Amino acid sequence: MSLLTIKKIPRFRGYFFFGNLKPALRYCDVHKTEGGSVLSEDLTKPKRRIMNWGLAVSLFFMAGLYSCDRPETNMSAGVSDNSGSGQRAGPDVSRRSGPTVPKRSMNYIPIRVYLWESNSITVKTPDVSSVVSVRDSESNQENLSLSAGSYYHLYRNSDIWNLEDKYGSNILPEDLKNANILEFQSRDSNPISVGIKRVKPYLGIIQCQGGSASDGFAVVNVLDIEDYLAGVVPAEMPAYWHKAALRAQAIAARTYALYQMHCGNQNHTGWDIGSGQASQVYNGLLGQSRRTNEAVHETQGLVLTFGEPGEEKIFPTFYSSVCGGHTQDAAPVFGLAIASLNGHECYFCQGVAPAEKYRWPEVAIDKDKVNDLLLKRYPALRRLDRIVDIKILEKSEYGRNVRVELIGSNGKTSRIRGEDLRLSLTSKETPILSSWFRLVDDGDRWRFTDGQGWGHGVGMCQCGCQQMAMLGRNCVEILQFYYPDAVLLRAY
View 1 (cartoon, helix red, strand yellow):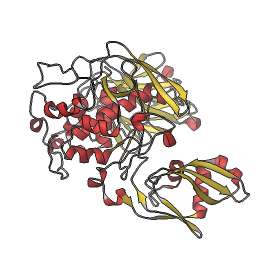
View 2 (cartoon, helix red, strand yellow):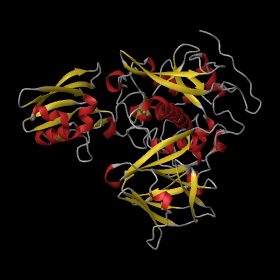
View 3 (tube, rainbow, N blue to C red):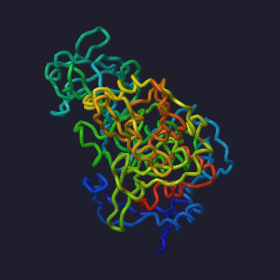
View 4 (cartoon, rainbow, N blue to C red):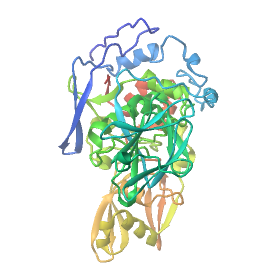
């Protein structure tokens, strides 16, 4: 095992592993392998590894990412990294006074986040003394200014933009009514609130992208990636969880976002990443706290990579809520053959996960409803006429259903992933929380029993991450466990 060079940084108390390791993230491309799509990334020199698993982990616990110029207990009113009580921490009282403003990175890296698609939205300008400009994204010329603390109703009618004030008048000038993309931006960088029924505040630019059918349009938030992550971490993990868990979440979320920006989103040109559970949950400024903002800032620019020294590549650092005792290989779920995303046993999530998520109760669904739901999600299955039987073709070594066969009334068959089956059938009324279940034919209904875990189970288990932090593990050790052989680098 090679030795790790540890550089003393004067502004930190103790040793800090990240030093001057600052390769610039330039671009990525995707190439196909036998296992699926694999990221190929170009990181410019100089490039060195931040982590050498083994020596780095043992030294990190003594020096720690938390060895800043003030004690952990003074950084927030919540829990500390080195608490080994094994108990769930209390609420974060720092949220009572509101979060600190996210600290912006010196390297502005814009990310385009898809919020939703709608026929109309409400736009609220900041309450403070600020002016919001409305412009055509293509010409980049400001055509309209909105005053502070005002509500507006934006919609499209026959491909014409309408921005109505409180009097119901369309205040858009003629050259903006036919724009393809309208942009709303505060001149003072204050948040703009948008929504359908209830508005949420967002930093950066709000883009309304036309071109959808039936006068609908996509709402996209364009902002710095570090500001984006400040809205992801509290949406994906409770703010009162241990700092080590929050830091691990921030690094995983940053890596995933950069991968999606450069390689993952091939179907949409108007945005880089979604804002829901299909990608990463993002709630703008809503729910941000001092603790989660600090976790993002303290890990700024850090990403996970894999590969030989000098040939590291970022990869999609998937994560889910509860793995159920064993994480899942990425290959059968996402078609990615990456060693750092191979499944392995997890001893930790049971200590934090709710009992009904770790071992979820039996779910029963009528066969007619199963047929209707599958045909609705996959219209190509109509060639089966009617789905009359489901057979499990392949299971993982620990019990997750990898591939299933659907048998039609006309004798034809079709095969889908076990994860696709559960995503087609799960609902609020019939929650099938994972593909780890036993399928039972019960006459006119299907029973999903012996269910374990919540989510796809690939990569980091969030509840296991929290339990490891509660046991005194730092974020490096957590990431090492869930992404084995990964290398931590500073991308910017």
